[in-house]
Length: 253
Image (cartoon, rainbow, N blue to C red; front, side, top):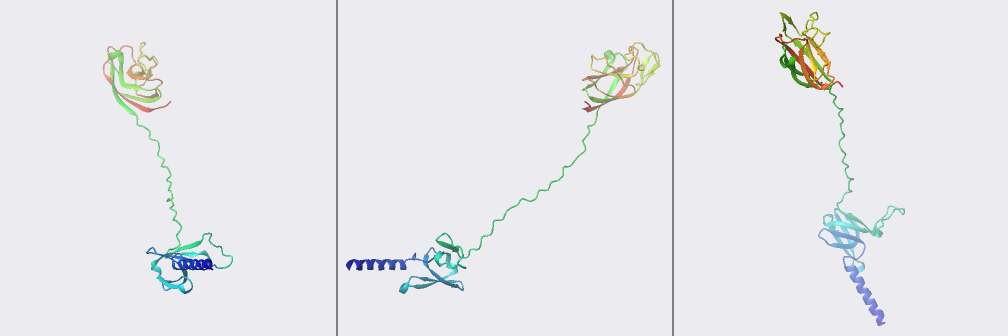
């Protein structure tokens, strides 16, 4: 009997503690001041929660403004369901933060559409020819050749234009075109006009080029460009031809 009495007293004390503590049972209300209340929310209206705390004669009714409540954790057994087929949470409780709105899905930042501008096509720029002015001596100075000062490259296009008049001696005068009817068995280009303007590329080359008044050609080798007069005897000559050389920097091949 004594054992039963002690057991009854211990059980009663335990029940009293469980009913008086804030962590008793039911819904859990967390206040903004840090307090935690375990009870049963029975109603909400006019911005106030009505909460029942404790059981039997110890039951009390508490009223809290919604502004004082931080969150509410409803015990799953106390959460009403829409029908018998409703799915319950797998956790022990459902937490609702007072004043919390349903989170919006994150805004997906999309890159602005790329505007592809068609490539601007420009016509290829053709480099201007390099122009060189030379005075070609008619006498035997420098073995009868005038160095133009330009070293051409194989494949460059060259245009040479002559002007002026020189003396071949004996009262004979010619332009860069020369005199075809004037005989000279010692001239460098036997089939071309005597006294005409001629050219050669390189100082060890005998592939002479007859220029005359004007001629355009493509260099067949690299080398310095020399100009001269198509005549065998230059000792009695005098005067100069005014020559313009136009060289295209691009290579034809």
